[in-house]
Length: 479
Image (cartoon, rainbow, N blue to C red; front, top):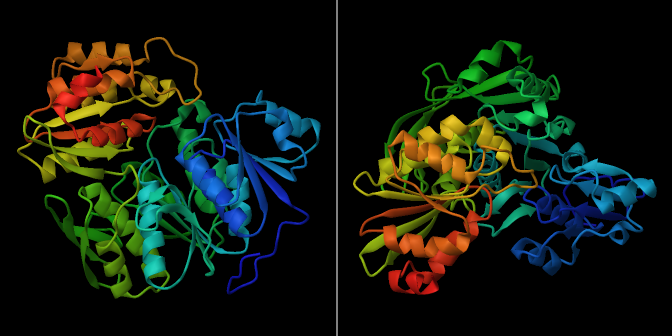
């Protein structure tokens, strides 16, 4: 078993832990930490990927495809929210009376004997978790972390540390974050998303976030964004110590004097004791400054020194697919900058657009957008029409289903028609990702920012376009 500077009791008689959907963003990190703790870890996924190959390089056996025999001799089976009850491995585990647990239940076990810091919210979870992890690592706290994206500086999305801290994302999509019992919790914002889980009732979603915060011990601390109107509405209901952060003057940790530069931002953060930090981030966008403020609030509560905070934020290299800049390419028609971003909710897309407009105000924005989930496209349809109309050119893919069945009127073509009718931008609809390079070759001009946006497999397109170096002639040859 891995050595830590405190004793971590092992799960009683658990030997082999099997993950169904091990390649998922929320699953592979937990699997890797458990393998590093000395457990036998196996998993399955519907297709091989860079993630499954990475896990195999760490000694984790990964089966491609779901099969009943994969769970034989497992002590426990871990499932993600994407796994349906008719999955053959789930069914076989039930037949064999093998415990089946959600990923959050397994994360809760990792957190049980550590000082847990859980980051929840509709947007910004991954970046905020990464910022906190970077600060604690810089300060020598050697945290364990489990993140939904690749921490660029470490090259991994999970790590088993020797310190007492475990820093992790808390996923509200299936309400499973209620299994967690951290010492500190962060809530970045609350918006309507994953509403099928909550019966379409926003009040139920808000109540679930309150319940999540009440899972803190009475001596725990809730760190919440004061700029979010829903969080401000809920503040009187939070029966725990609260630290607020944001741009509002009444915030305990306040961001001010924000300045956007081309590839970075600078701002000041005033804390409750009146002390001020001068912060520089290498990632643009005011939303990133808010994420940094949350991390500063958490680190200050843990009495981490100012130099570690400033140095960690200043050297933060970002997270994979969170405003990831591939560089500036000579296309044959001039230079074009390629950026990839994971944001898939209208508010996230708007924040990314705002960051581009602030950093490069004189350049056209060409967006390749892939909607994620039919339910989200349906629930946020009007918001998508509004926000996608803010770009200069729009290339629209069909919906990435993420296991959902199609919903009439919530597909990419319907969204494309509605955006066209609104008249602010003339979108190009492409039914296959293979068509995108050819369309890009026709659309891009000198000075453009080309942004691939979404949570599905659109991120692979950014890599394909980067391999072409956005060379117009080569992209047209592909067609």
